[in-house]
Length: 400
Ligand code: HSE
Image (tube, rainbow, N blue to C red):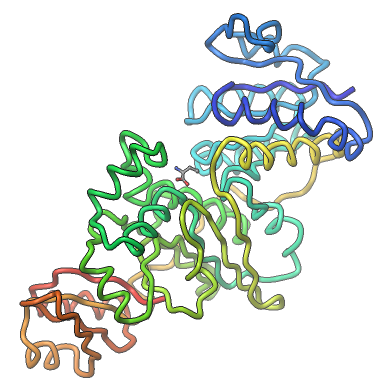
């Protein structure tokens, strides 16, 4: 019988217990023996709840119990999650976490600790919720050099962008609705300003590069400046605006960025709507692949956590090699990346053409008193210089 502990009985922790109880038989068959949740660590007592007898308040109860082989961390945040997870690994227990903040900040260190103690640290649910993207990168796509990862990895903002595109409403209106429905947090900053997506792309890039990418180095723009007028222009261009987290190989490093992009109809991410997530991967041998599914929510996320538990149970006493060295990767300057830029301005056409040379004008009758145009392909730093010369830029959104 494999004994596990769950640290944090919130949305994900309770989902983990539910997944294990609902699919007990098939999970046990896959592991080859029984599985039991011995402890649940939480500040609360859960009086009258069937889990009450398993609730403990001191993480050392778990760390010091040799019966426990696997620990699930679903508390969120960096501390005390880091201290607890480190203690579990040091005590010879394998750990799986859904906590992207913890993985982005301490992934390399926790993997090294796991290796040192001959156990494993897994984090499938930390990016893309229920979508199996981490295992795909670590196990299935290891024959490839990954040239690009572009993902819709934040369900809240994708829901908002989809609503704005479908209903033509403005950002503030759709944010209020998302908050009322419980999709957006009361303080939505981490989602709408792209910080959540930034942590996720930092984790994915660390895995494909094999070394630490600091999320603080990821150039990040959110969606809070996107308006109903931008959506009208996007429709006119047969494109949609999506908040993308992208990582592109440049020589032996990557350009990593989170920003709203204008996607053409042919792009596989064009049709990813609502709270769904999807990650597009381009490998030098594989070509293109896409992973699509529920990126958040109790049971989808718990499903990924329990899949890690099964994997951990199958590898007790055997460390699975995972390259994520602690040395920081110097990511490429995003200003050297080239693309086309969609621009809205109050400037006049002669001035636009003098500065940007050949442009394609986009006519949206509802946007009176301004001009929308698309530049030719140019480096980000050249665009910045030209935009400064133009002076009156209302909006800029990159093509993808
Ligand atoms: N706030 C995140 C999202 C939750 O909206 O995708 C999952 O990481």
